Each structure stands twice: as C-alpha cells, then as structure tokens.
Image 1: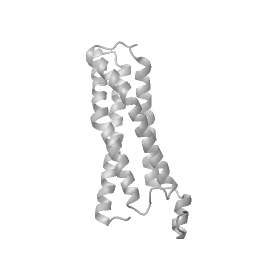
Image 2: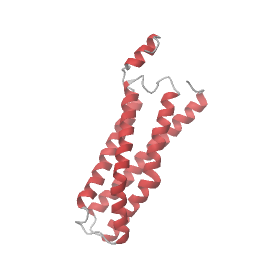
Image 3: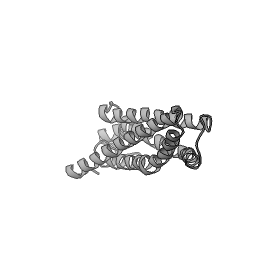
Length: 173
C-alpha cells in the first residue's frame, strides 16, 4: 500500500513532530531528574519529581505511543516497508524496546512523584530508584538519537523479505 504524496507528507510530519516531542519531553525529564538528585533545596527536589510524574504521563507516554504508531503506519504506507530494510526493522525494535522500558519505569516514577507530593525527600530517600530513573532517561535519549540517525542516514541492507520483493518473487507459502 502506498499513500498519495500529501497524506504521506502529513504522516511523515506527524511522525517527526511526535518523535521530536518525545526527545524534548525526555530531555526536560532528565534535567528535572538531575536537579532532583543534585539540588540541596528540598522544594526544588519535590517540584522536580512531581513535575516528572506529570511529564511522564501527559507528554512522554503519549508521545512515545504516537511516535510508534505513526512510524508503523508510515513504514506500511511507503516503499520502505516495515520489514524490507534492516534500518527500518532496527528502528522499530529500538522504539518498541524504548516504549516497553518506559512503561516499566512508570510505576517507579509515579512512586517517587507521589512520595515527593506527600513530604520532602531527604538526599538518601529512594536514592537507588532516583539514580535509576535518571540513568534510564539518559539511556533513552541516546537510543532515541540512534533511532533518529537511522531514519536520516538509512543504511543500506535489505532483509530476506526485501530482497524477495525487489526480485519480484512471491512470498513463501
């Protein structure tokens, strides 16, 4: 299935906006996570973790799913295909993995945010979890930049399915 140029460009634009939004929201999250770890001011620490809870559920999670969905639809609606090129497959694996890891961290993020809303956090409260949250945010940013680079550079390499389609062979039965 191939889309007409205008809807395809609209879809690509949506995918780029959602993906960049995810990167931007995650960058803001990381800044707040680092502030929560390093600030000596209790109010700053509380505000950082409360804000991270909100950013997670109202920006990062929706943008991650929107990026994933528009990426899949875009791949299916363009000549690149979803499983024809290795770079598309790698990008899909990266985004699915990043989204799954994000969803795995939401309970910890919510717990820290809830605790911060109830009382001031000392420098030692949930320190391991707070470091984990910041570390995962940094790793997530690196992974999303890698996915973006794959989308820009599009390294060569067809999958077995891609080679068959290029040669005009029918799929195996």
